[in-house]
Image 1 (tube, rainbow, N blue to C red):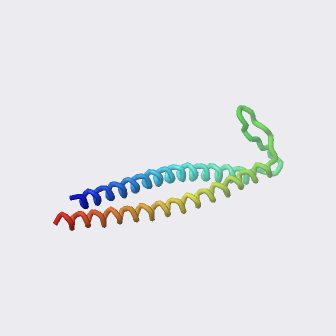
Image 2 (image 1 turned 90 degrees about the vertical axis):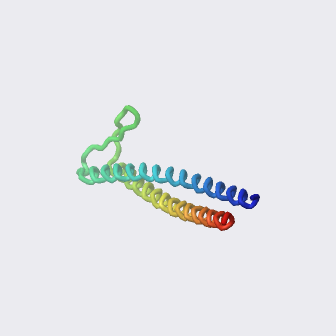
Image 3 (image 1 turned 135 degrees about the vertical axis):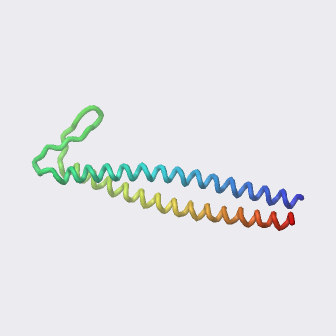
Length: 122
């Protein structure tokens, strides 16, 4: 009976770890979605900036004011944001992959423990 309780406790621990990893995974998915939205917005801005002629005035919204900025500076800023967001997406993908592997490990542990518990009860 005590061994059965021990297995039940281990199963509960594994399920708790699995649940915590699942929550982390969901947070990463949400953050990744926000990054994809930002990336798409920046790509649209880049396309619009590419359509402008060199003598077109370019403004940046800072708080409630529009501030004139150099077009090259605006393009550089957008390109840097796109690069940064792309790197963040790659980092999130690696984290998601790692969390999936951890989830699978805990799921397998739970299955083994459940099989062990069934074998003992038989």
